[in-house]
Length: 218
DNA sequence: GGCCAGGACACCA
DNA sequence: TGGTGTCATGGC
Image 1 (tube, rainbow, N blue to C red):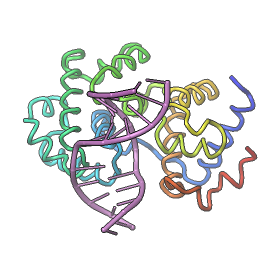
Image 2 (cartoon, rainbow, N blue to C red):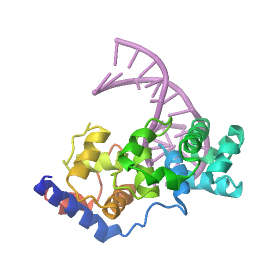
Image 3 (tube, rainbow, N blue to C red):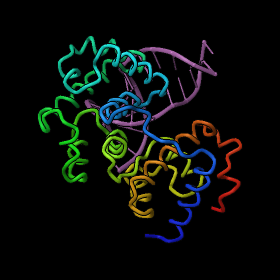
Image 4 (cartoon, rainbow, N blue to C red):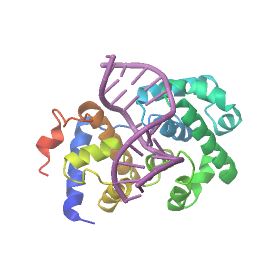
């Protein structure tokens, strides 16, 4: 635990929280919907994911059993607006297939054990990478893991907190070792990063009118 | 009409 | 380990 770094991280959180909070993430009605959304949003605009979720609800497909039983072609058609529909339909199939194999299709059972062991096992499921895995653990399971995404890396690299080319685990560890282990804090922090970056941060530009660059003495 | 979006994975050197 | 190609829709 680096006290100076912790102070900086909490300062940044406070600036974001005062401006945007509370975010009340994840935008979903159930833990299972969080899992589905986490896979569908891979490299995809959230607006497109919402269209796919609407389709899944209309077709009665937003449950582990329904996803397991639906033909993959029909699933792909339903999630078409989210893009990569062939890839993502098979990833959803792989996830629920594993969920039934290991936990009888129950998220409650999945989350009931040691979450660090669950993380390692989830990461071995095809289509569940680090960000998707941590999103599921934090936002569907209320486990104290920090979610790192493109926004997080971009913002904290620009703030000089992490290296430009830092890998996922390095950034995640930086947050988790220098913040109190608090599910509510991790939940809100990541949501605030996304909320802020959607407004200010573009891929090949620096932030325009970004409060953090003015206010944080980093 | 080009760029981008809340990644993951296979393949390669 | 790091770099590159692939997967694809929809909004701006």
